[in-house]
Image 1 (cartoon, helix red, strand yellow):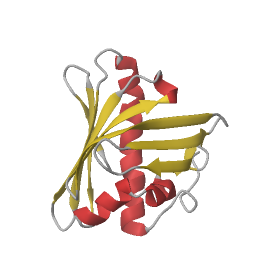
Image 2: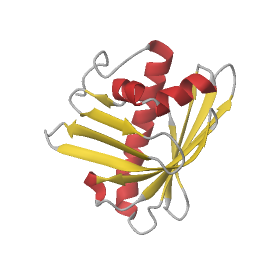
Image 3: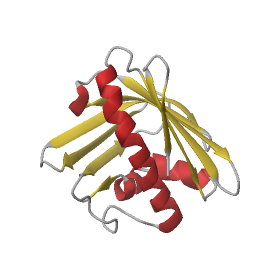
Image 4: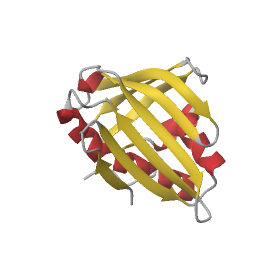
Length: 162
């Protein structure tokens, strides 16, 4: 289960999880668009329908999907830092939260026969209500990734949301 914390200034959502796989495998799961489409989402909740990636610093990325309400969404941004298999930083602009840019930072380190994943999503100081949305979402997303990497669970094989 992923842990969750908020920064004292409410600018950042912090979440971490241990995954029983090497950092390189985890890094691939979060950077390969084909793998991301397989694990990020859940029937009855939302799912990605398209992912695009120009995987280089300064390159753009985009994900589109459909929510449980049938409405389409889009999240996009630009890669800031790419240091396989330990660090990935990118901007995040989501259609469902006012399109205000924020930043997502993934830090991966070898830990106890696996990988410790530390995720920081920052840039909420001016919109703390959005941080509440993400504080509920990121632990779930990390759990989906863990289930995919450790057990091969996908959006299609995962139990639907109640």
